[in-house]
Length: 121
Image 1 (tube, rainbow, N blue to C red):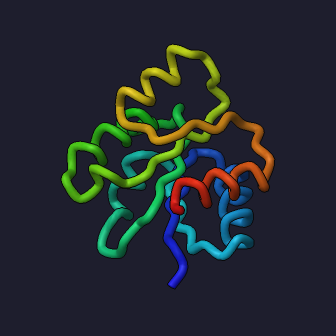
Image 2 (cartoon, rainbow, N blue to C red):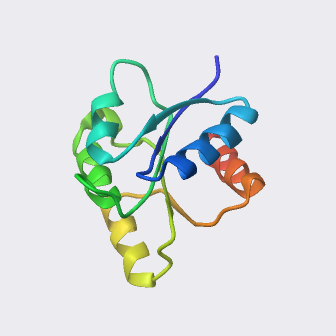
């Protein structure tokens, strides 16, 4: 059974690009438009990895990570930030919240797949 990855981004084109890339690499993808939408889609099935944007309406990426990490079920869930933000302070904020990794947009599809494979083992 293929691994399930949730992509969270308020940009439809980014969600589409990430989904297309990951599905092409054999993963199942669940797409969410923001952190609140992502939290609502976490159950019932298993999600093996979350790839989230930082800046989104309703609930941003850092808020999403904090809420996921507060739930024992998601304490060790790999979470990758995929964002245009590259400042050290923003990366530290994401890491402090519990982000596993950080990819700066625009990304190369092969780079995304390589990071996903590394994180999922």
